[in-house]
Length: 417
Image (cartoon, rainbow, N blue to C red; front, side, top):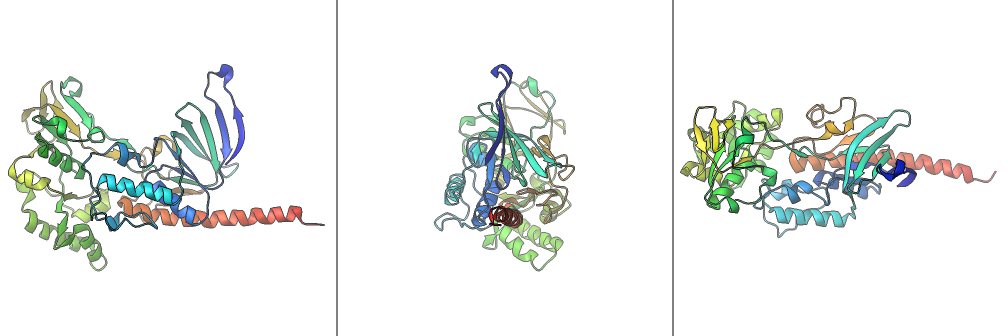
């Protein structure tokens, strides 16, 4: 990384600004996606610079997930490229075990991100055919990093999504997003409404139950609940095998038949299934089915009560769209996350307004002018790993060509006449 220029603001009141050329690609984000790209580039002997806004790797997993979280898929489907999980790890590693794996992965490939660097702008400079990425450090210094390649690995879950609910400001109880939830222990004996019925919402309801709270789960639309395992194997693993030979609709039909045999009729308890099957709806909308880790038995027993969509909040509780009202002590929004790419990347339309590539998988990992994105396929860690391999290989080919040309030019200038 070579410094180009530095300038001090007038009177020393403006943040100090500098600019530097990066040898190799700039990677935005030090989560699993960014680490996977960096590791693969390291294997190709390509240098890189990672810019990460937090103070460590895997910020989402480290700071914005609850304590009981485990990988919802078997570890074989969650490994990053080139390194397997330790054999002693369970089939579904815990949050702590997954973070241990990521830190070991980072050390193994000697990955050293630049922490505390929040990217505020990235644009392609047509005049120089270079990407200019502006990042603000925690201390106030602003740096423009310049490279021929930019890898967007900030992820689909960069910012919490909190819906606007009428009357929220009047509610006297606690309101938080799932990213702030750690454990149900402090909610013992309290009536807690969880808004959202995805994997996180269901698992937080389970955690609240096990800590003596009284959880209610607000459901706005249909949801597919599947057993995490069926017929002695993981549901996801079975689906992946069947998709090699059968169309999606037929695999969906099989999964739903077996799920009904194991779980019973979910609609009877307020969880209506969508018209599209679980795999088809994932393909079309990106919405994952819920893989049950224990909450379903509490729903059937009535310990977790399913309620309608929230219409508004009042001083002491909530009113629902079906007209019912309920007193509450706390509301937790398990309403997911979104990409923040549109807020800083100027890309001439490669990304949509909601921060996802316009191109469909598997061709959405590469954009124009040396732009790459990793971890935006909607296919979890498995998809991020595949994106990383493709992006790193493509960058390596281009980088090696650049190095060969540069070496030839240098040799020509020092050759004797």
